[in-house]
Length: 252
DNA sequence: GCGACAG
DNA sequence: ATCTTGTCGC
Image (cartoon, rainbow, N blue to C red; front, side, top):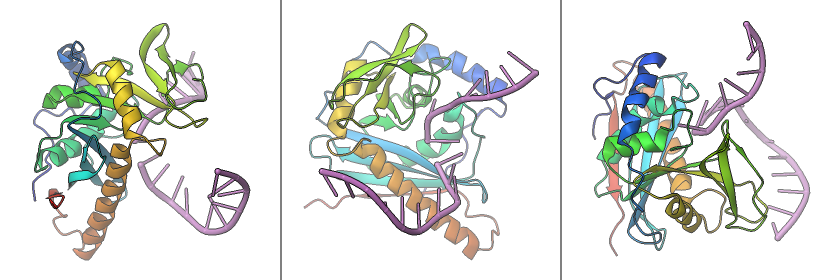
């Protein structure tokens, strides 16, 4: 069990949060290709909320990039530290995500986020922010185009089209399944766009979303339900504090 | 000013 | 994100 406290100096207001993004975006590294797709480890992170009970649960699931089998996983539960504001998602999700990542029993390798990296109003979305704070290579795979525009990619799996902010390409709309709505991939930190696309495709052999986000989504939802149940059980005394759990897949 | 808007 | 049953199709 680890603690999920809010990082020191975490912004309280939208103005502070935007100032943090403006200051940190200069630290994003864009000239590294990142780990080769299909090798090493890839970690998916996701967060689930219960605003009623002021609970947030994050999960980190480490997969073997070649087999897509789960190598390790961890969860972290805490209190909501920031409201959802378009463009400031990282301030709502990162405290719990960072806690989950820190409680992993092994290195995460490439981190795949549920959201955007460079495809962001100030070019500093969740995946870039996570990358800068942890130093880890990171990419963003989102389910919606946010405020960006794109032309429909060809229907075949693997085809993609530029995700545009005006005339600037901030990512790609990538088809992971034939004739199914594309996912929106953008670079986070220390990974090239070409590799971000290759990783995403390799992680989504059967479903629209990468296995990393599917596994992390399922795990954080379970963790949230358990936390809500415990909250009710304890009558919300001191609150179930903020904790994290992790486990390693058995080596057979 | 109004509407849109990752999760 | 979350509220939510069944249903159409491979």
